[in-house]
Length: 168
Image (cartoon, rainbow, N blue to C red; front, top):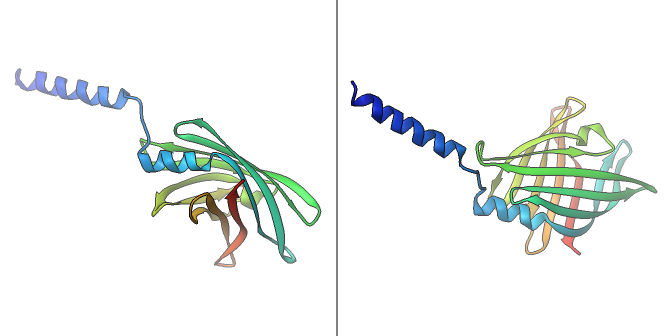
């Protein structure tokens, strides 16, 4: 028994040291976040109560750390303009991306959580209006990414924002 206690104490100390070490994202996660940094421009479409309308956005991505990026999109549609803010970070503990999105509309504002798969980022959106949706960053080649936001309307997934972006 006395021999078992030091082994347990050693194991526990080693486990606690491992937990206390700084977390670092993997190469794929860090690379994806870093790829979002910089200047982007895109023309896409947004859903409205009257159908769809063209939307034009200029986006600036800023790295806040090696595992955190913030995006600020200045968008205009139908003579109106607004700002969409997005903050994303990768949690080594949960092995997931987490974040927040803010926009002029409540069903595109809320908390985000998701994973990187096949080079694309899939995030679940818990919207401020109580609805749920998805936010996707789909890579479309070097210097190109597509931002898609979907929500559920009458039981069906509906794309409410589709914005192909190119590095400017």
